[in-house]
Length: 367
Image (cartoon, rainbow, N blue to C red; front, side, top):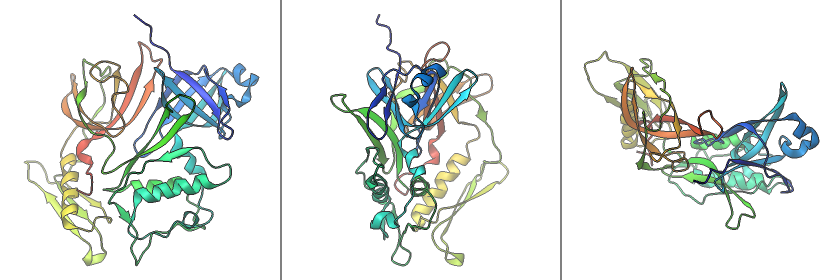
């Protein structure tokens, strides 16, 4: 049986593209992706290696990649290198983290706005195009051509970005994906077809990223290797949800989703000003109530690489059926993957920590 090829870490000068290291010996390596965020990487390096060549991981000027099984699994920028005893700790984040260090110096992303009834996906592409058009600002990221029906801006109140606004471009993208019925994004990295270059991509999803997966599962005794914490949070419970939509004052849309279920009445309120129809607002209230009526949620599991869900078979945004059985609980339900962190050198073999949210929390396409 052929021994598995260990994960390989590579670094590259962000401005010139020169390869700096093709097998950086990081220990305690952890890396992973995130829904609507950059994901992260961390590891440790012996100081002797950096003393010999300090540009191997020059913060703010170095791309870092992880290759596993001949495929690039993760890529991003090194942001922090610091001493910890006799070792250096390296921290990195993927491509969207770059926009936390860039600003709209010209207003409306270089004249691409203001926007009226504009697709949020198009504005995300405009932000990236503006950032990468500046001298020494192109990191080679491509953004999916995905379109959506989630819009911002009206003739009365166009969506604008002002040059005097000191929020970074990354915050502006966060605002575009943070509401109900908004697009998803995640960062991905891959070799190009002949492995001579790297494809850095912002994957946009509408009405969602990921899919309902019936071919893989996460289960106790199969691939879940630690008993996860089960949260029984009465503070989050409600069987009555009051949802507010577009409008102000007495003209504000409101929908109430309520059931009686033999428990003390508990209520919760949400505000979704981007929803301007009673049907979509009612669906949002129903979805909020559905997940709030579930006592006992799982936020995180640790799994091994098994045929039940091989590493690389799942991605951020997927809904996966989760079964947890232990002395305290019997849990079974659909959960959405909101992030993952792979630990190639974990004791006993590679592990992955999966961040989860109840699938019922998410509504797609405005419903």
